[in-house]
Length: 147
Image 1 (tube, rainbow, N blue to C red):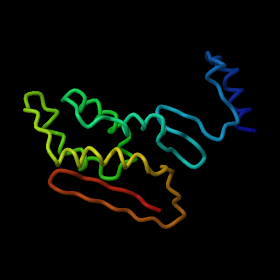
Image 2 (image 1 turned 45 degrees about the vertical axis):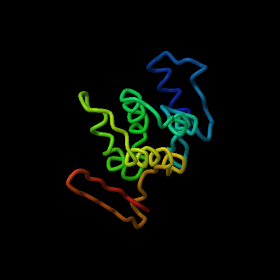
Image 3 (image 1 turned 120 degrees about the vertical axis):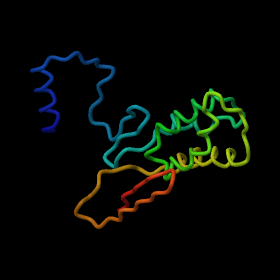
Image 4 (image 1 turned 90 degrees about the horizontal axis):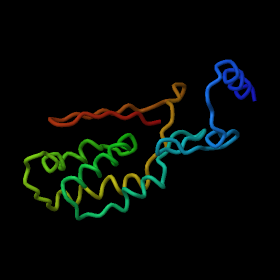
């Protein structure tokens, strides 16, 4: 309750323009910028990722760029995203001949399935033990903290 009092004090003092239809209080979770934010952490918004899950395999260069933009927006939720998206690099180059092959079929499925079981991202609990993993190769660098 103290947080709400503080919020209302700031609103009274600063006098911002707030739209009642956009103000929600006392909710367990909210949808924000394609994410579900709750006390548990930040998760992907299943309504938004449904578009990615239903994306058709047969596409052209422009459609692939749009798909990679959508999937890339959720890259924090997809383990090893840079490596998964790597085969598409040549296909999105301006003067590259479109040559979709089996490697692209496999890579195309990975972000779609990863988002269906994406983790909930939380702030680290520094008091608990954790595992830091890093990985690097000639074309990708990555790290992850697991608790």
